[in-house]
Amino acid sequence: ADVCRLRVVFLNNQTRNDEAVRVGLEGLRALGLDLPVDPDALRASNAAARLRVRAILQARSATLLELEPNTDELSTRRAQLLTAMISVCYATNQDLLAAVIFEMVTILFEHGTFRAAPFALVMQAQLTAATGDFVEANELGDLAIALAKKLGVRDQEAKIFFCFGCFVALWKRPLDAVLDVLHKAIEAGVDTGDRVYGSYSIHCTQITAFASQAASMDETIAEIDKRTPLVSQLGSLQVLRFIKHAAHALAGRTSRLDVLDVRDVRDVRDVPHD
Image: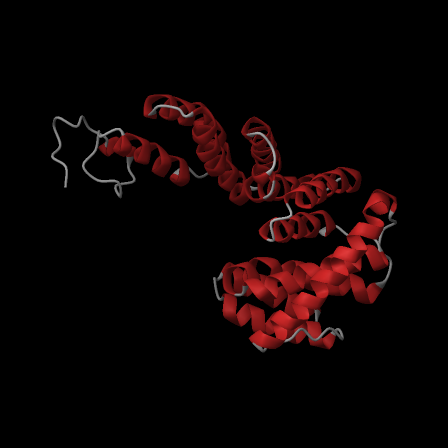
């Protein structure tokens, strides 16, 4: 099972996600956890698991921060493998992703905390928001952040704040409050070197800022320029360059939206439109 976990990470890095899913399911079976493969069986299992997890959360959320660390070896190894499977399931099979999250949340409340528990909890909040229960989803997101602080998992805060701000908080909270969450995600990404979720958060911040302020294209471009130093620290300007070019294009200053190099931005009078 431990070998399977390492293979899942390796295959994920190579974008061989379907193969990674198969390896992950094999590893879980070795640990006594047999998730359904048939789509109909998986959806039926998820329906039951959703009810079970919701009952657990309603009964025990208030005592979440009092939970002790997990000391059970079997459930710890399951949690580690399930954690490795989150990104590959997200890319390939949303139903399987839900099953993975339900299992992780169950481990949290039955056996105690583990490093990835806050991320599992914010993903549970995301699943809850998808059902339209935005109040409960926001409460779960707040619990995920509080648990991350308690466990001291600063290296995971960029993705926790990003998922909360981008997929949960925006359904219930004022957009200024959502921006505050996303700014925390950016800061955590810079502090810990999490380039992936730091860049995601900057991208989401630009969209949210535009929506909340009804900004003009010039104001949006100025906001992008303010954030360029942060993106430079994360090592990738590609997303920000695309957003800036899109803003110029929407303002009618370029001939095409799909030219990513902002140096290509020229005055509309000099460039005919397609």
